Image 1: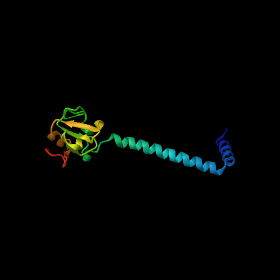
Image 2: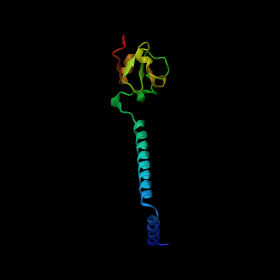
Image 3: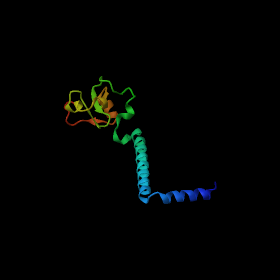
Image 4: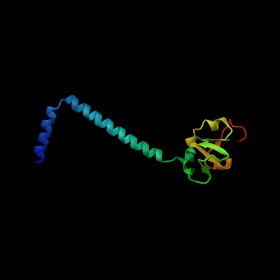
Length: 121
């Protein structure tokens, strides 16, 4: 079978399919492709860390920040402020997002700033 014969068979097949079905098929294909590419781009974006945001994700495996509850100050992985364990703001951070620092200086070095509504910092 030659290329010209294959092209002719495809044209004949497309003539037998209603035009609306072809349009709907193309729309479904394009939207699925767009969603998949957007999902992959989102995965790529979530794996990188922007150091300008003050994110502590860079410091998760270092000795200055831990996820165990032994630190003197608490911060959120996605936040920019740190709190004393007795502050109300610290209790609003979910346990999965809490990062503990051994001192306020270490929290500042990781890019966090003291919370204004937490007395004693």
